[in-house]
Amino acid sequence: MSTRTIAFVRLKEEDKMIIRKIAEYYDVSESDAIKIAVKHLAKELGLLSS
Image (cartoon, rainbow, N blue to C red; front, side):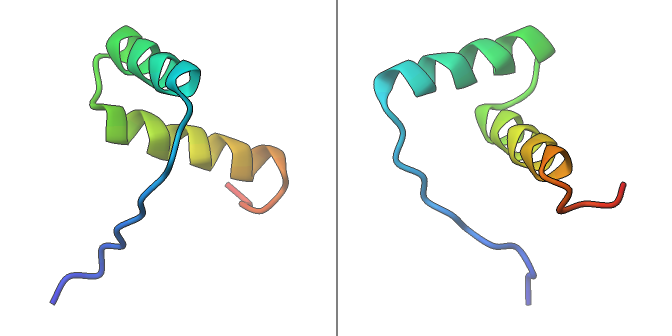
């Protein structure tokens, strides 16, 4: 059994464009760009210790 979680996110068209640009810049998939952004935000908010 997998421990992966699936999340559906509704984004405005401008947000989708930003995600695509980030993914292209770092040469990663759009889903990886979203994961990176979520982790970065959590770190800024002090929700992650590392």
